[in-house]
Image 1 (cartoon, helix red, strand yellow):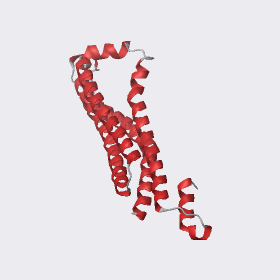
Image 2 (image 1 turned 120 degrees about the horizontal axis):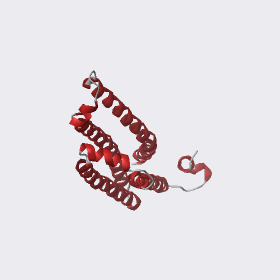
Image 3 (image 1 turned 90 degrees about the vertical axis):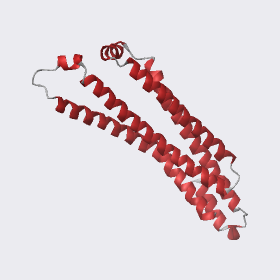
Image 4 (image 1 turned 30 degrees about the vertical axis):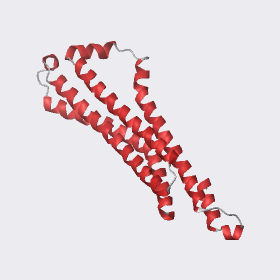
Length: 204
């Protein structure tokens, strides 16, 4: 049983115990827990943003660079990267603002509002990442599979439809794995925020 549950039990039985915990004590505990949750959401989003660029430092980029050059993907990759970085930095800023708002909230109403706002932001963040992966993958497949270089390397009996279906299924499986990762990591925080929201609603 965590501290919040202990505090709730004491508050319910304070007439018996002689202690004087109030609804404000419960509110402060929920506020503290919600602040910690949103702080971790912010930290994980920053790590997720920086990790690919850190991994690049330890990765041999010769082969990917050659493929990008052969199929003319350099400009496309750069444009997608610029858009993605801007949008992710926007999400990180919103996570930071939510963290500041929750840590500064002085009323139950404000805390309820910002918990809901944080939950929505996390869901939009997940939807955006999955959608961007889908669009990026399909765009790359379209350019590569319709290029003369790719077609010239195919055997005569190759079925382009089968190749398309295989590529989409494999990319879809990758996106599904990423979705499962998000469900595990961010889902834990969202459930905790939902519990906090429920506790506050009971005492509003």
